[in-house]
Length: 179
Image 1 (tube, one colour):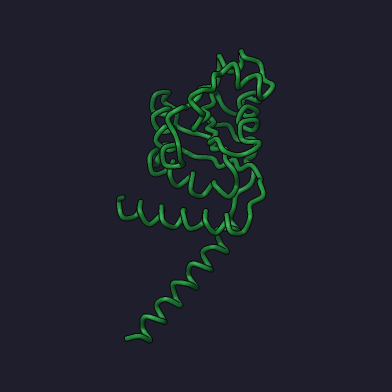
Image 2 (cartoon, rainbow, N blue to C red):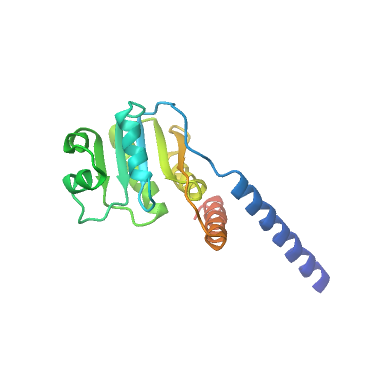
């Protein structure tokens, strides 16, 4: 019996290690020039908001949702902070104040997408965060919305990558179990 348990643990460790290697090797990069109805930026990393604004300014998306914004931030303040005209925020940028984590980013984004009737989105977040972010959004948006990953490159310590992989695996399992 003990040998079976040790073998099963060994197989599990090998599977998780192999999965981690694939996770790291498959991290996405920036998307191309493909157009989408919307662009959604998940706050929390350098370069994300600038990347999202660029997509609207170049006509690759009609509107931008910045999800997970602190409740004290106002559009005019953010426009000044990122060096963009307030008119861009007035016409084309929505600030989402309801998200506090990746799961609630998915909920906030899904509600926003339904409200606008959009069927495609460019998802902007860090490369290491993209698999879990895409998983959460896909779970809430279903197959009727096309998600284009647009990853912002960023450095991440190996321990943080392992932590992100663990979160991804746990959410994948939870969603698979309907949790």
